[in-house]
Amino acid sequence: MKHKILPFFAISALLFSSSSFAQKTTAFSVTASIKGNYNWNVIREIDLSTGEVLRTLYDPAVNTAVNYKGIDGLELKPNLIGGSATGSGVAAAAFDAVNNRLYFTNMRGNALSYFDLGSKDINVVVNSNPAFNTGNKNDEGNVITRMAFASDGFGYAISNNGNGFIRFTTDKTPTVTNLGALIDGSKNGKMSIHNQLTSWGGDMVGDAYGNLYLVTYRSHLYRINPVTRVADYLGQLKGIPEQFTSNGAVVNDDGDLVVSSATLTDNYYKVNISTLDATPIQKKEAQVFNSSDLANSNLLYQKKGLPNILFNDIKGNTALSVFPNPVTTKSFNVQFDKVPVGRYNMLLTDASGRTVLSKALTIAMKGQVEKVSLPRTTGGGTYLLKLVGGSTTAAFNEKVVVQ
Image 1 (cartoon, one colour):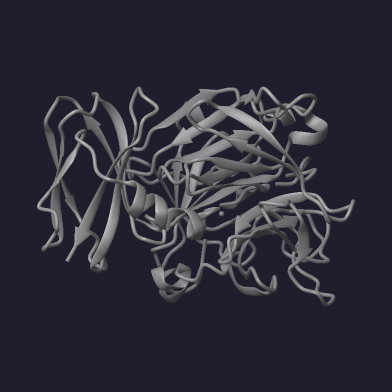
Image 2: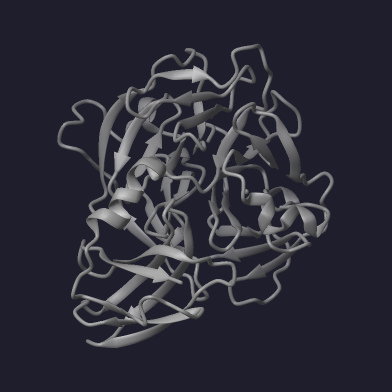
């Protein structure tokens, strides 16, 4: 996101088909109408290897017919800043691959919204839960400038000053929870997650282990534990031009972090997360759209880390059980034998770490049984069922074999 100023839709159903988002080499980008401008209200899909624009998905100057609904399904009268879906500018966006939605918030607004990418029309659903309001947006510190989905299936958003750390769900009865202020790691020293000069703005991504990685507009990197809210400082990206502000961040198909700038149109940079070395995505001169935000569903360490975690280290447990297992139909049952009561998010991921199913549920008693229906496109193979949330920091896992 841009430090101070800080995702629709196509004209036909083809642009919103799920196949449009299957390629992991692409990302959604919040841009201006033309390169070099700073009105962050146009949504494009770009090729992460070149920066090339593949299509323009929403442009308020072109797509004037927008359907607004509340989370209750009732129609809303348009009342957004600037008179368009993206208002006077988008401060943060995150792609929900499970439901094919682009979540976003307007820079000066207090609502969490999403574009329904599965619709041939431009449908925007607005969640006005007061927990998403981080304060008066005339105070720049309260503006939400970072948003991403973590591997636990929850969406997370963070205000500029780090005092508003918000978690939200994407189920039929979505919840929004302000978790409180982020906490500086014990080894951060003078590098505080709350510091305006070094740690505001930017963007964040999730990793395969449940963490969030935040790149600030000054290219400093923090790892955030969503459970403890601790933000550990990892260092500053190397090889980034001095005038380059890191405002958008995603993960490409090779596992590299890719950052965009809201100020420069010279290039995007890919970052080796182990060394923090950054290199241009193109060696030749190439003008790209300056962007206040990038969003896709890739996770750091997804390819290298998850196969071992999912299938070698998970031996099963006695907290929950799956039956029948192997699964021979498109459904199975999960019994929560020793899982504490509480609200949880249940995820089913494949061998590559891709989430194929996400479901929010409440466990009210020992031995509770929930039926899980697999998506129609789910193929055979080994999957990981993961349960996160509740009042503990534990995650409950079980392997599921689908025949």
